[in-house]
Image 1 (cartoon, rainbow, N blue to C red):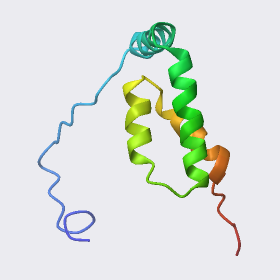
Image 2 (cartoon, helix red, strand yellow):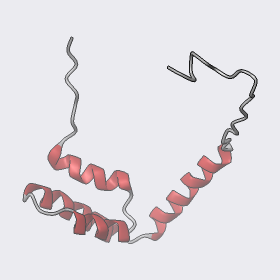
Image 3 (cartoon, rainbow, N blue to C red):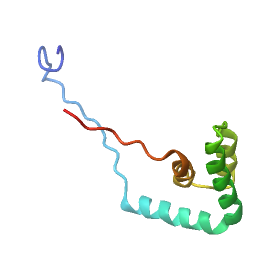
Length: 96
């Protein structure tokens, strides 16, 4: 490949800044998620997640229900789990 292993210009030093994320960022996200779950209306969240599972059985357009779930502050994981209840999870067949 030209420029990678042939005709390489070693005279230029490339300085690529790396993004460094402090451990506190992750802890802050977890704390905010816990606060969000405490402040949302859990019965509304449960209701819309059940509705998503029901609509999966009917082969309906799920997008309106997913949008409603997001507006009720359901997490992406909760929405996906509601769909997994009906569709399951794809597993790749490994073969040689």
